[in-house]
Image 1: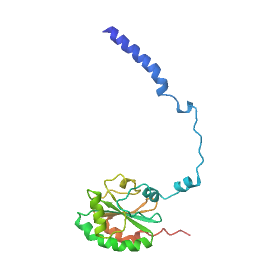
Image 2 (image 1 turned 135 degrees about the vertical axis):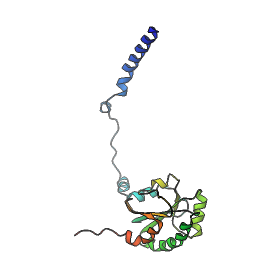
Image 3 (image 1 turned 60 degrees about the vertical axis):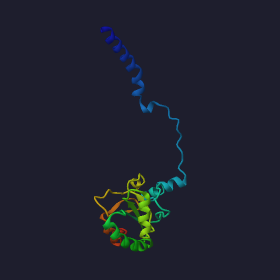
Image 4 (image 1 turned 120 degrees about the vertical axis):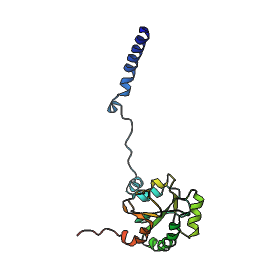
Length: 187
């Protein structure tokens, strides 16, 4: 038994002596072989791109409708085909959407349906020309400023950088004219 402890102590000492230098090596002690790469004009432009515009380029939407990259504001509309209040609100939202597009406000449906087919059918039933993504999709989580509502219908209005301007009931989306106003510059 004493011999077993001796060998374990010897092995742990060897292990500590061999592994410690590698495990605790100073990062700065390693030679730097990476070259700094100059950013191209395109890379610089992409880094200055508003957060929501950058995110929508990476998202696969449910329909061929794509969100406007020129929008100044985005409304994330949480809704579903099985929700009575959502279905009652949708005709008003679709009617306002035509006005919104002219003022550079874009709607993105955050569909709470179980399948993409149900969400697409919901959009098509109301003639909604705006894009959608399922709430359960990892793509939905890429949207800057996205919130998780307590219930639906719900809306979140963000500026192009993802700053939340409104988060609440879906009817709030109908007040977009008052919410989506550019901040007045101080003189």
